[in-house]
Length: 507
Image (cartoon, rainbow, N blue to C red; front, side, top):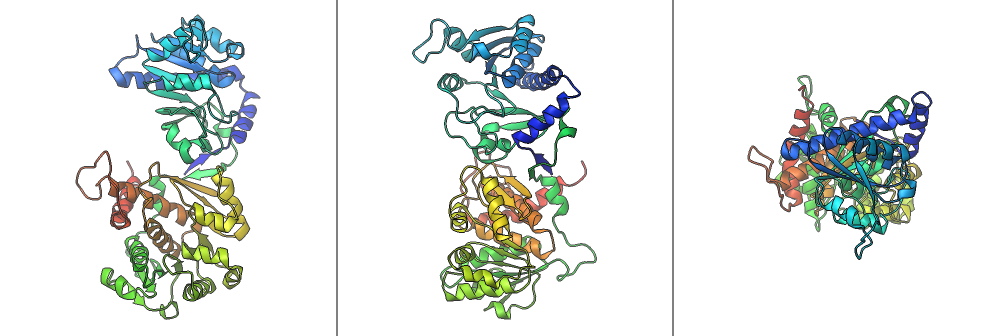
């Protein structure tokens, strides 16, 4: 599991590091790491580094200093380096001197012979002739989009961009992009991941992210957010062992669907089956539809007749009328862990008395999309999805999974997991029903709810990606991808589980 640290946490760790290591030494460590990644990128293009051209986009402060020192290291390897200074009077003095000593040059962004955009001829030439550009415009303290001059320079870049710490113009805390911003091919960050690297649009703008160790790792506190990786999911995904039987590997109840929405029942139930649940019990009006698609499921017409289960998944397609409310109340009273989705969330939002049915000792998982979240919270999640999810999880004493390209999962005690899909293939009708079934199946095995949600979200997004790229079997993978439906996503779930299990194998 990878940690994700807030800008304040990182700045505090830096100050503790500076107490024993001079700040200029730490800056040059960071710059050396950036230079090394840039040299690798240049070498990947043509097999060599010497004679290539790099432009530095340099803002004020230490982020610009990192870029300047990186330019100095590259210059010593035979790279032609030109620094474009966006705020010449606030340029990091030591970094600029280091670049010039190494033979690099610096030009103002708004120098002589400016064009109609205000960009100087030398600055424009440096950017347009570069083989690679280093983004050192702003750092972790910045907020808001790029200013016009920086935005215009970035617009002219037609080669790979390596961002120092974060892509400029992306909010460090939320990953939000509200105007012009750098879209990096590679981001070199220091000590650990920041929220902007894994949240929202920021994850896309960050490109590939590599973490460079500069000595602050041991100074970092516990991370605010954690990011799951495939190997961890695969290692802990429940797979039957020699001593297991259908009862020991999880019995999950699915209360979903109706005469109007039988597909919700089929998808949620199928996901629980595909997730390797030992037994799946379906209860609801779509029992015949479920039996015809999943004959291994024990299907009954009502939750009262379902029999004993170890967890419930409830909500998709149950409707908002009296019958749906009774189903939800029964499940909440059961004393079992519950994953409540879709119509269940709407009922809980509209009728506060439904909460009275909840067994306070049984874990509850809520899985809203942004609209359902607004019903629960009274407003949408806004830009800071982590803070919003954390607040609502605490308010309802529930585990909250906020859906999106970046899925945010918050526990009532403040812990947060993030799953960054980096694509939108799961954004299709019925996809949430599949996720509900996966979570329910994992809850039934006794996995802690926060992790159950995280593992399910990871496999769910991977299954969607595999299905979209036609890689669910042994055939070749399509690079472009194609639209998928929830049925295709569901069919890819076993392949996604196999993929994470393979990732957990010793290399």
